[in-house]
Amino acid sequence: MAIANVVVMVTAIVALSVMPTASAPPPPREHGHARQQPAEVARKPVEAPPRWAFPPPVTATAESARKAKANEAGLVPVIMYHRILAKPLSDLDRTPSEVRKELERLARSGYVPITAREFATGEISIPEGSHPVVLTFDDGHPSHFAFDEQGEPAKDTAVDLILDVAEKHPDFRPVATFWVNREPFGLRERSEQSRAASWLAERGFEVANHTWSHHNLGVLSRKRVREQIVRGERLLTKIGLKRSETLALPYGSMPRSRKTARSGSWDGTGYDYKGVFLAGAEPSRAPYDKDFDRSAIQRIQSNGKKGECRKWCSKYWLDWLDDHPKERYTADGDPERISIPEKLRGNIAPKRRRQVNAY
Ligand SMILES: [Zn+2]
Image (tube, rainbow, N blue to C red):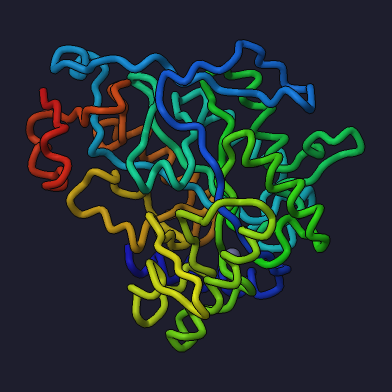
């Protein structure tokens, strides 16, 4: 799969080099489990954000885990989107209807979105029997988020599509991760950037760092890599967000010293990520897997099955996961325990072994 990864990445570089730049912030999170939100789930009101109530936590037993076919050592699709355009300009662009169809498919198949931060830290609080999916949007394009004249998410933006699908499928938790550069969502005014960031953060969306100007970090000196990351972080702080806990590498390109992407400092400002994300081409291991590498987390490009996406993109992998249910992450509904078939016990990272509930 290393080869496929390179192929997809190279295409991404070509396509992305014509894209606008943007920068990033981090988000706040509703965590904790049975955090019941007020019952109003209305989609439209500006002042009453839709809230997804976490399911009441259950205590998984060997019996309940077996019944749910839980496998919390299974694979998780982390889907990577770029622009959403009615008339795509590059292979990476998707139309609103393609995105909607993919989200509908995920909802119907029992997937529940979690953020990249929740995934990287293993804070996965989704109902028993469901599967986590991470929806990620790179480059902070206006087609990811913009306000309409009423101050609502503009039609056919990523946020609009996600909320719309969640309205029809109440188990589909409306969250996603937006990795932005120096002009988040194409906005230049600091006040506009702050308004967008806080709207998203208040609703549980993650906005995090995709570096300042979207350079290929693989060709920069260590110092310049740190500068790119820190300048992105500083912007996020200025627009009212917390430090990013995740980073997406521009073009999926790793700095020569991979440690530099994970943590470091420049000009007196430090960073230390819980997860660093690549650009593609296969589902990620679960965060509890002993071979999970939080410095290089795999993603899948959202796309059909044409050309190089005959394999390696989302249509291919979502079909594959449907055909290989035992390979897929299935939750036990218990945020504290890691439920797995007995034969997978050895796959769990040593630090997590006391949480194992095997059946
Ligand atoms: Zn990018």
